[in-house]
Image (cartoon, rainbow, N blue to C red):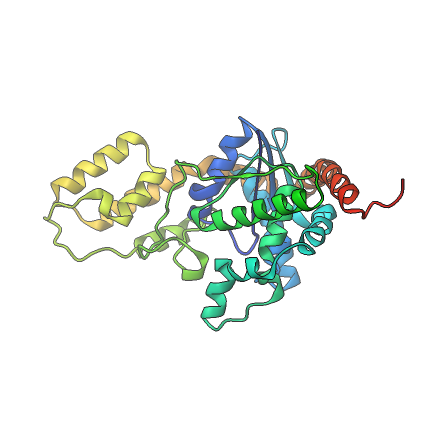
Length: 324
């Protein structure tokens, strides 16, 4: 199976990015043909400062490599380094129904809030479809909020194939992995940069400890027993602690008579240990940016080879390729 997924460089990666998506990327690369890209074209809908976008893009590559993405097993590239995707996006756009895009929830939600909804956000699902279709992707790992965009992608592919009486596009399937964690933020809501409630993967450890110590907790008396699964502090601890530590912490919760400060300290210790190897690898890659650029260039070359193959089929089917 060919797996594809992208991640936007709109800020430093946090625990939600890792446990909700990146961890699955790492697992898939050992089982399937995997393509992973840094979606800097998509990021332009929110990041409009050139130096910031460049920095986030490089940081994203370093973070993914540090977390275990192996460029010898998966193709890692930057979206803008594969211009075939943008060409394919336009070919899809010419056959995309306006009403289909108007029904997409990301655009509808932003418009309903009175926020600026530009053409980039409006046509985001078409570019996402081009990202997927350019590589004959079979599976696309996504969160539940992205399933609609995969359905749009399938609709566009089916429509093109039907109109031109061809099989130019492979129809992808959304892959919602059952082990993708729903990660709470430090305020108990879903972890998101939008809420400023994240725990960054590679921030200074002293700063992270301070942030962990500020995690919101309930006001129940210390002596009260608590159900661990209902507490977001425990849910965070479970992500980074060893199984025996999780079991011991759950027992402590159910027994009662403990302070949340004790749990927060254990969480900080467990997190430091869990990400220690990744942190060390990140320091090595950060010191060798040329190696990172070479990995991205090699990934782009491999990605372009596949995307060009798909683009040739689409151009031939649509008449864009006019030379016999």
